[in-house]
Every structure is written in C-alpha cells, then in structure tokens.
Image (cartoon, rainbow, N blue to C red; front, top):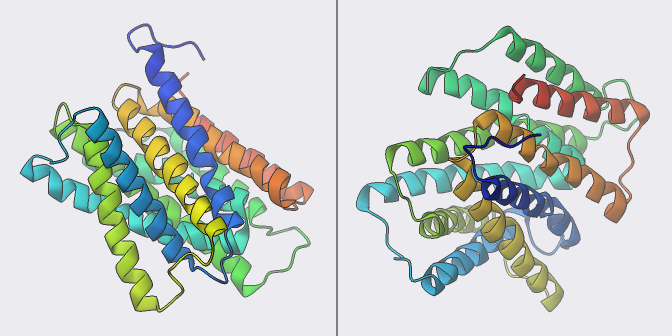
Length: 297
C-alpha cells in the first residue's frame, strides 16, 4: 500500500500500532481464569484501568481533564456502545475462541457501510454487495457449517455474540467518526478517557446486576487486567481514534484487518485453538471479503 502524499505516514503507523495493540485483547481475556472473574467484570477492569491511564497521560501532557459540555453526551453514547461491544465480544471469545470472535466482530465493516449510507449519505455499490455476500459465506464456513465440529450451545452462542458484536462495533466507530466531524480539535486522550470511564460504569453496574465474581482472584489476574487496560484499551484506542480522522475509511479498514488476522494467529500459537480446513477457508474468505469491501481500486 502506497501512502497518500497528503496523509502523513505517522497516521498510518499510528493506526497500525493501534490495530496490533487491540489484537492482543482476546489473548489477555483468554489468559484470565473466567471461572473466578466474569467476562463483564473483565470489561470493567479493562476500561477502568484504561481510563486511569488515559487521564494520567493527559495530565502528563498538560491536557485538560474536562470536556466541552456537548462532548460529554457523545462520550457517554460512545461509552455505552463500547460497553455493549465488550459485553458480547468477551462472551464470544470464551465460547467460540479468540480468533473466531475477533474475525466475526470485524464484519462491522459492512454494518458501518450501511450506517454510513443513512447517516453520511455514502453510496452502496455493487462491489459492496458482492463483498457482503462473500462475507456471509465466509462466516458460515468459519462457524463450522460443513465442518466436523461439535455444535454445543456455548459454541453457537459464541458465534451469535460475535456477529452482534460486529453490529455494535460499527455503531461505536460511526459515533467516534461523527464526534470528530462535529467537533474539531478534540483532545483525544481526554475524550477516550471519559469514554472508557463511562464504559467502566456500565460494566460495573452490569456485573453487579449479574452477581458474578468481580474482584481479581489473585495478583496474576490483576497484572493481566492492568496490561489489558494499558495495551488494548489505552494505547490501542488512543492510537486508533487519533489517526481515524486523517485516513480514508477504506484504507483504515484495510489496516485494521491486521487485528483479526493477528488475533487468529495468537489463538493458534498461545492456546492451540484448532481449525478445520473448511474453517481456515472461511477465515480467508471473510478477511478477503472485508478487504474487497473496504479497499479502493
């Protein structure tokens, strides 16, 4: 990919760095003892630690920790959408595997295109519909529709949660994009800090309602949660959001394909997740469809 001369190379590398950071989120979630700390509680600690780190970075850079009043509403909306994203995605990781959960979540590119059609009046081309149909076929293969795998209730729930994550994820990204369109010169650290804090509030309330284990059971789990908050939440989303407005959506989507690709590799390397040949084909078809649907000529 040859960078556009009008777009600074730093923006591409920043987005690339963010995609790599977020790709490790599934790995850290899988490393936690989910029988001792629930998936919603994991999201609570991830976003809480992420918010604290982001506010700390804002303090070091002498940025204001307050937002203009209208931005609080947008940050609250983004935080709620990200709460739904993590709520469904963490369950998809646990039930269906790190790689599959992340690939399914990244079908958001098609939901994003539909939302952009209604909100930003962007045209949906024949190219998009071909990519969407191909993605549906790839998702079906990835879900094991013709593979010799055991269709447990949890596995099917994981696939469904992954697809729902894609829809919610799209709404989250569109909200971030609309915020950048409506408000110029956003202090990224502060905005993402408040967004992470609002997400943590929703996660904490949800975990309390569920009556699931919330406190980290040991120092190992606390350490993993801290790393999750630092890498996937603070560094990852700070990098993605700060570069999002500088890069065309199609090219940004292409770079973000590194996230599900790496997550799949991490699932195989770190957890020996098993994929049948048909599922590998499904993963390839899904990623190719996402690329075909987002890349320019």
